[in-house]
Image 1 (tube, rainbow, N blue to C red):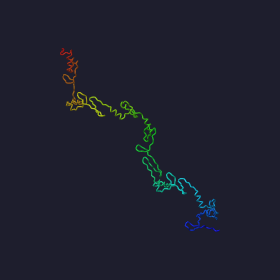
Image 2 (cartoon, rainbow, N blue to C red):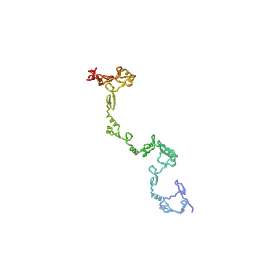
Image 3 (tube, rainbow, N blue to C red):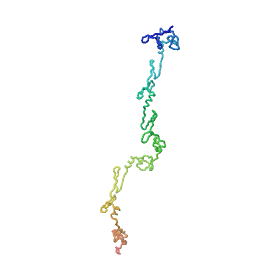
Image 4 (spheres, rainbow, N blue to C red):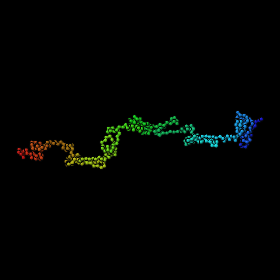
Length: 353
């Protein structure tokens, strides 16, 4: 028997020989349900030769399945999937990825990588390197940024000082107590401990002091408390300034004015020094003469004791000296003369008076 080739109509209605790569589908469940096609098959499988049987329920390697059987089997198949995969009418789909769910994702274009605004595309390693090559990291004081090697950035913070903000450390307990370090800051405990170590203030040393009570501020005897401005004002309001003549005091609010009257021949007071002209004139009654002015006016003048021949200084005789009548360099006053005349023992010209 010679080999025969099967001639079929193609989808366009033209007759052609069935090609090796084509499939032959026989759709007739009633006429071909038990039909056997005898003959050797070649080309389908290198390991198979023999007859193929078209059967409603194929069970052997030599049975051919009908379209109806295939559809029946397919209808009984149930496909299940979990997110991001979903199946609808045997249509398998993968949901798009998001920031909260796994899914399908496309690669971003280079332009999208540079723009940096797309949220539904993935970046490839070469694209990431491309973007990082244009990356610039800047810092503002006290932060500094250095790049070495490329795309490796080192961020530092400058140390803080009294003139610039920056990084600082906490002071140790000993540094807080010493109070000399200028490059460290205090913790609340450091401050509390430092305050607790401050001694009380005295008249000879600085230290801590409490505020005076109202009574202490008024009494004015406590020496270990501090007075507030309000207490000082209240105390000042009670101050009274008094003066005796020739001084006098007037008050306007908290302002006291002390004045003095001029001296007179009957009252003490202020007096000014006389001028040379006033000394020479000898008429002013409200000025004082200094020893220097007196020396200027009477310079070279020698004052001697008075005698029967010279004018000068003379001492006043006592009553007893007048009665005795022996002193020759004493002056007799009317009062002492009267006392001598009234004395019973006084004798005048050798006889009683």
